[in-house]
Structure formats: structure tokens, C-alpha cells
Amino acid sequence: MCNEIRTPSRIWAQNAWEKLEPKLRAECERTGSDLPFIPIQGKYRDCMMPHGLWWWTNGFWPGLLWQAYHATGDEAYRTAAEGASARLRDTLNAPEKLDHDIGFLFQLSSVLQTQLTGDEAARRAALQAADMLAGRMNEKGGFLRAWNTSPWADDASGLMIIDCMMNLSLLFWAAKESGEAHYTAVAERHAETAAKCLLRPDGSCAHIAQFDPQTGDFLKALGGQGYGEGSAWSRGQGWALYGFALAYRHTGREHFLTAAKRSAHYCIAALQHSYWLPLRDFRAPAQPVKIDSGAGAVIACGLLELSEHVPELEKALYTDSALKLLQKCEAEFADYCPETDGILGCGATMYHDERLANAAIIYNDYYYTEAVLRLLGKDVFAW
Image (cartoon, rainbow, N blue to C red):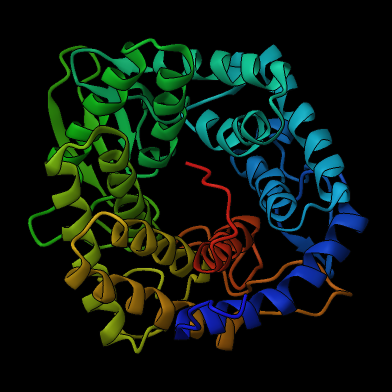
């Protein structure tokens, strides 16, 4: 459009999208309705993890496809997205294998399918998934149980993690879709507990909070996937920032906005110190340098979300920071070659695990693409 405002962020995003979309198109042709995690020798494989369909990242590929379909209108993306989303609905047949990450699985597959196509089977499945997620609430502790088993505790029933802030969107969606307020009540209570037990006064956060599952009493915070107790695992910082900003969007409760701002300010300060490199942990030894590009993409999305909920004079702090972070991630980690799968390399699952270090993990690509499309105004709101 001739009257379109060409801001620096939009100029960058348009340039990135012109390189990104051909790669997504090539990946779609190769991968179709498979559910990839990381590329092996440059190519995606289907459900490669031992958990198969139930692996927590399996929603990100259909999420990518739905975003691409919304941005382009290309039916090839829709066909692949519908196939991948339908496959994930089969996870409901073995609910004992599902955990709190049922939100990630269904928010980016069946919920987006419902929004974009009105598919009734997808809607029913997403509401069933929301019921399962709400059923994980520990009423005495006020939190959604994270995993079914965990290496960080003999009894996983008392664990909550910061990641689950993103899964709350499934409950907020279900409340609006069904008119049932109890979904919102569960989501709000979990978010309040996270703000109290995981978010620290300086805006950093712990990964895991451990409770007595019988009494609901808070016991301690654990380092989890970060460097250690008291550290600041960067992807967890992203989950906190984005999750609290979304909680504010859905509830209008000011203390969630305050929590998002605290997390954002901690992230921005840490990233300025690292010259916008998304370190795996913002409170870890300077050497060796360990990177998690996925954390950078999640934080960027959170900053863009937060910018929509603050006064005009505050917006630039968050949008400019998001742009600097995205530009750094593109310059250092992006691979737009359509012959290979995976876009944003140098990902990591946790600080102390090098098995997947430097991988182009599927959630890196989802959040990077979401951020690019959001800057262009072409994204479908997924959360």
C-alpha cells in the first residue's frame, strides 16, 4: 500500500519474511503432516522422540503451518496443518500420557484450526483438552501440576513450572468458547501462584516450584533446566514474560501486567549486557558461552505482546528491544536455505544438556516466525 508506514521493524520483518516464506514452503512440501522436532542430517523426521505423538513440542509444526496459511492463503499449508492437527487429536485416546503441555499441543493445532476454519471436530477436541488441563489443578496449592514424572523430584505431583504460563491460553480460550468461567478461574489461580512462587523481586524467575502435594504448602524453588538454583534460565524468562503479558490480555488484572514488566526489564537488562545474544541462562558463569536462540525468539514475542498493553510512550522500549533481539538472532543463527530443514539454529533444551545444543528446534522456528509475522501485521493471534 502506498500509504503504509515503513518503520524500521516493518522493513526488517518484510525482508525476513521474503527469505523465510520460501523455506517454510519447501519444508511444508517435504514434511507435510509429519510432526518434527529437530532436523537430522538437515531433514525433519516424524515423531522422532520416544514419546511419539505425545511429545510436548508437537504442536509447533501445525502452529507454523497455520501461521503460514493465514499469512499467505496457500491451501498447501492448510492441508498439511489439518493433517498434523488431526493426528494430535489422537493423543486424547491415551490421556495418561498427557501432561500440562497439552496446552502447547492443542492451542497451536486444534484451537488455531477452529479459529481459521471453524472445524467442529477441532473445537470439541480443544475443549476436551482444556478439561484435562484444568483437571491437573492442585486445589490446596493453587497450581497446575506440571509433569507426570520428573528427574527433579521423586513425587512429581507437587511440581509447577514457569513454562505452564503459556499453557494457560488454552483455558482462557475455552472460557470464551464455552462461556464457562471455571476455566478462567483455574488459569488465574495458577498465574497468581506463579507470580508469588516463581517470579523473584528483581524480575528473574525460577524454573520449578516444589510444593507439598497434600497440604499445598510451598517448599522451595528448583533450578530445573537452568544453570542451578537461583539462576535465570533464559527460555523460562521468556515463558514468564510472554505468559504474564497474555494473562493480563485475557483478564485485565494489573498485577499480571506488572509481573510481565518486571520480567521484561530483567530480560532487557540481561540482553544488553550480552550484546543481545540470548544466553541459555542470564545468571551463569561467563564461560563457556552457551546460547539458546529459542529463548531469544520467545522473549521477542513476549516483548511484542507487552508493547500492546502499555501507554504509547512506553511502547518503544519493548518493540525496539524485540527488534534488536530478532536482528541478532537472524544475523547469528538463521538459515534460510530451502534445501535444508530448520530455520533458527543454536537452540538448546536445557543449560547442562549438550545433546541437542546448537539444534534448530521446532519451537525456535515457530516463535521466530510468529514474531516476524506480528511485526508485519500478518499473524493469526495464537494465544
